[in-house]
Image (cartoon, rainbow, N blue to C red; front, top):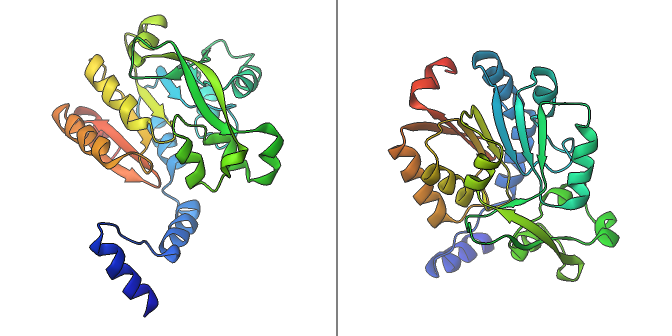
Length: 250
C-alpha cells in the first residue's frame, strides 16, 4: 500500500519508481543467460572477418573484459583506449607481447579543441571499501560515481589527455573498421554520435546504453536509423549492425 501511494506521488512530479526486485532479477537473469555479450562476440568473430577494432574504455584489459580473448586469439589490429594512467599501464603489460595491439592513454571527447581535462574516480586509499566494479566506473560526471554508491569524500579527480574520435581514427590511420566497442560510463552516446557524424565507416557497434541521458539516446537512435543500422539490446548493451550485415548474425 505504501509503495503504491509513493509511486503515485512520485508520478505526479514527473518521476517513476522502479522496484528493487526488478533490478535484482534483471542482474541475476542477465548473468546466467546463455545469450550474453560473450556469446554474441563468439558469433561475430565466427561470422564476420574482424580485422580492425577499437575498444574505448579498455581499463586493464582483464577486469570485466569481454574482448580480451578474441583480441589475443584472433589477432585483429586493435586500438585500445584507456584514460586512467594506472589502468593503462596494466593494459600495456597485459598486451605487451601482442604486436596487433596499440594502446592509447586518452579519454575520448567530442570537443576536438580540448586536449586535457579531468575524470572522476575512487581514491586508491578507499578502493577496499567497494567491490571491484568501482575500478571501471571512472567518469566525466562525478554524480555517476555517487549513483554507484561511492561516497563524495572518496572521489578524486585525475587529469587526463583528451582526443576526439576523429583524431583517434587519423592518428592510427583507420580506413576500415569492423567493430567499435564502447564502455564510457554514460558518455557512450556522445562518442557514438560524434563517430557517426565524423566518419563514413560502418562497423558493428556495441556500447553500454543504460547510463546515457535520454535526450542523447533519442538523438543517437535517430542517427542510427538514418545510417541504416539495425539494433537490439543485450543485457546492458545496445548492439548495432549495418543493415547489409545483419543477415550474417540472425
